[in-house]
Image (cartoon, rainbow, N blue to C red; front, top):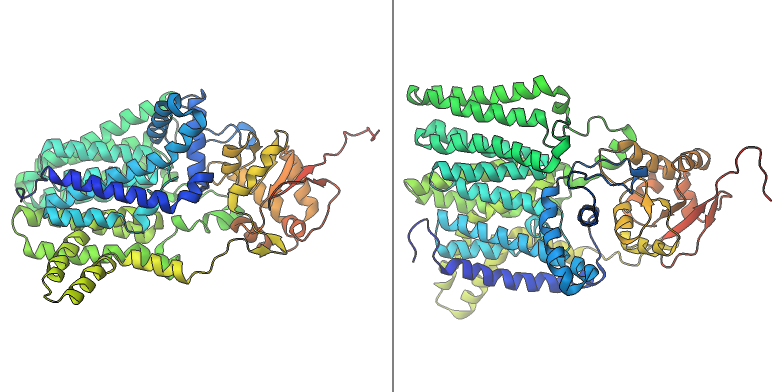
Amino acid sequence: MTAPGRAGPRLPLVVLAIWAFAALLHVALAWDDILVRRFSDADDQMRLLEVRDWLAGQSWFDVAQHRLNGGDFPMHWSRLVDLLPAGVIVLLRPLLGAVLAEHVMLVVVPLLTLLAAMLLIALITRRLSTERAAIAAALLVVMPGPLMWQMRPLRIDHHGWQVVLTLVAAHAMVGRPTARNGAIAGAALAALLTISLEGMPIVAAMLGVASLGWALQPARGASLRTLGLTLAGTAALLHLATRGPGFWAPACDAVAPAWLAVLAVAGVGLTLARLATRFGTVARLGAVAFAGLASGGTLLALAPQCLAGPFATLPPIVYHQWYVVVLEGRPLWEQEGAVVLLSLGLPAVGLIGGALAWRDAAGTARERWTIMLALFGAATMVAILVLRASATANALAMPGAGVLLARLFVRARAIPHVLPRFSATLGLGLLAAPGAATALAFATVTPSTTKATTAHRPVCDGSYDMRALAALPVGTIFAPIDLSPGLLVDTRHRAIAGGYHRSPWAMARVMIGFGASPAPARAVILASRADYLAACPGTNEMERNRRRAPNGLWARLERGERFDWLQPLPIRGPALAWRIIRPLPEGRSAP
């Protein structure tokens, strides 16, 4: 057995073996989707497009989508996440060719993300407990749930790397309270914010946990100081490296000067808070609170509009027809029961296991478990408020769940009779990972919707069926916002809008075009200068359009009505497309 808090040489090898098994399993399960490159999320398609555009010569500092909305489509994403996918493509392209290299990248990058998360979870658990518990925690990563959802094949969006960077910071924070570990945590959290500002709640929570830890234990002062200063300094450097000429551009939805000022004030404030070290716990708590208030006051003074969030200025139609129905950004109490159980099942087990481990620990071990439980609790609260954060909460819950699983395994193996021992051992996985059981049960009882029909038409398989539009001469397509990213990835066409809040009026134009009655819809569509109108029956977005506007343009087109300004086009598969007939210039007549 290795020394307490240290991982022996065997642990990484065991984790690597578990990862290899998990990789083969998940590739096999997703094989059909991998073969035809069927994405389950438009953000993965948009990320692929970002990488492809960069490799084709688009500036590192330019993340706009120039094939959307006539080229006026700013994005708030960071190039930082593009580095690994682009690197894999460049590495494989000489061996496999451009197309196959890109295809292989879509599998390799998520699996590398999974390996990083699995190894970090095992190392955190080993730092808190035993090697057996660390192996159990690594095994739990493989189970179906919010974490595995973010690291499955074809999932190349930034959420998986947000989890990984949170785990890097957590690993440093449960280690010895040294300046080095503080710097590692600060750098990881700065990269997390650079990737996406939606990580700010978990960054604030982790900074708060570190601050309270120092207030209660002044020996943690060096770690807290370097955490705060490294966070601020690294965030500024990464912002310069990824935004370049746009360094000073204001923004509420991405790192910008106002947010950098907030981080700088927090870092300096926590450094100055150390002056209160010898004046007692209450004085230290007051100093930490003052640093927090100063940071909040900085945001209020420099960018008060950011307090309302990036979605406060959306047009009403976009807010109600897009933002409210994007469930990953909504709280858990607005989700289905199965989703709630899937999100909170493992955290509940992690809480039990962590609490038991905390009860049995003493000294440094108990301090580490206190920090871990605080981090995990804060992440779970964030997940309750925003569903997409449940992957991070599940990741931080796995050390506690791993400890519980390891303890129960020892008890199960001690059962003298073979059949009860086997049954108890087999049932441990479902007991320790109730989210996985929920997912399996939900998949069993949920009826299949493949090849269903809507209004006597075949249902589209999302953007996969929109690939048939590649046969049309290149033009601009007035398409649903959820399907436009895939359209750009799979064809050479242009589109009007995607589901990205920095171009809300382009999104509103598409919603009005499909939902308005034919006459105003025609005016909106002609004003977009689109060459084609296309849609996919049965997709969520088109069904919402049909229900909210039963006499709107899309509902009438789906019923088979014809309009003299829309010429139906023969398209293979269930997707529908029309050529837009523009009126002749005034004063001219048809030949």
